[in-house]
Amino acid sequence: MRPTQNQAVYDVIISGAGPVGLFLACELALARCSVLLLEAAEYPHSPIKQLPFGLRGLNAPSVEALHRRGLLHELEVPKRLKAPHFTVAAAGKPVQAGGHFAGIQFPVDKIDASQWPHRLPGSPETQLFSELEELETVLARRAGALGVAIRRGLALAGFQQTAEGVTVQAGGHSWRGKWLVGCDGSRSAVRKAGGFDFAGTEPEFTGYSAQVDLADPEKLKPGRHMTPTGMYMQAQPGYLILQDFDGGAFREAGQPVTREHVQALLRRISGTDVTVTALHHATTWTDRARQATAYRRGRVLLAGDAAHIHSPLGGQGLNLGLGDALNLGWKLAATVHGHAPAGLLDSYHTERHPLGAQVLDWSRAQVAIMEPSPKARALHAIIRDLMNTRDGATYFAGRVWGVSTHYDLGGTHPLVGRSVPNFEFEDGTTMGEHLRAGHGVLLDFDGRASLKTWAGEYSGQIKHLSGRANDQLGLRAALIRPDGFVAWATDGEPDANELQEAAARWFGPAARP
Image (tube, rainbow, N blue to C red):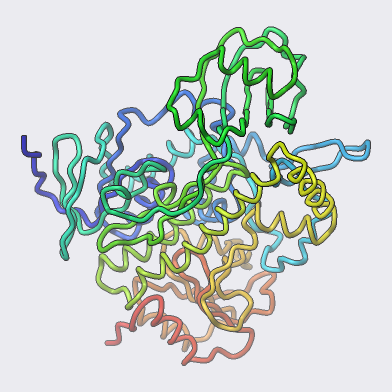
């Protein structure tokens, strides 16, 4: 039977309505693109998303992105779990930890925040916890309000692309779009059908997340524990995470997770005779680390887990995907509307692929020191010592929190390529609030009439923002991209040629009368 052809032609079709696909849809719709979002699952919520395992750590770039789009205040879980840090025992006294690397926690009191001068006191949190289900609900609500068409229970079956667009088949229907983006997860149908090369390394372990009833929970220590046969973690009684270094064999075999299997595995790893009386929910995962060698093929692009997969150690996956969506959204929208400068869309791969590769290596490095072997234990001890130094704790915090995120955009000013500081203006507004509309911003602390006139030539693309801030970091003017990253900045008198060159690179030529 031939698919039923829908007559509408969308600017962008997105496959996958997880957080990445939803956030990308919001970014595109904010920029006045018509968007169709196709999701294979008929219902958006699953039991595993409602467990403590459904909690996700949002790092600084993700928190900033949600704040800049006016979404952060809609999340209730961060309000209940305001402090992202937790307390651990060290040398007999409590120490506040800001995160971990391979289960090794770095102490907050050793972090030297002066190494991040762009992180102003009024900046959003460096870390917040959010429930995956709630995040998806908030994003879906915003997407619907912006006019995104969301169709659930429709798994992508295939597509064909031409020089003019893409035709997508799903659920016996066919849709046409100018562009297709795969945000459909680690087993992405878009990636497979599009012929993207997915290169990387094979797994070392099978991981388990399970909710169980235990007859004798006191036999398991709370927290994370590395043993000679693997790792187990009990965040709350009955909520378990296990790592079995079987080369990913159990996950690859596709076997069902039974109560008997979880009990046998838990006993072997913990070295106890603990008894599992009931298994309520369980999911498995591995540390396979792969990345698409290109994020774009013609009119088809990838984002999130469709573009890169790795173990969930350290919770970097969601943040990496949200960063993809933020970076891609405004660039694809500019391309759709026909005012993107040459190479703008290709800069999505140029900027995001290196960050994805770093996260994959970050994941591999954690696995290397978690293996149940003497060499891994030796590395573990060295990393622990480094973390307890000022520079070490600052380095790990910068990576885990995403504070050190930087794009190589050229330029000599230290802010270029970094997330714009959340300046607090004398009128009480913040930089984040001025980015809500998804436009570029020309930040002008001196209120120059010439810069206001110049920004007017980019009407609809660049907003002129004039006003004094409480702490300007010595800055006089800056050009901010729609994703909140600094494209050009100066501490002195603005150079008109430098400003115009930066604007042409990211926004195209000015629309002069």
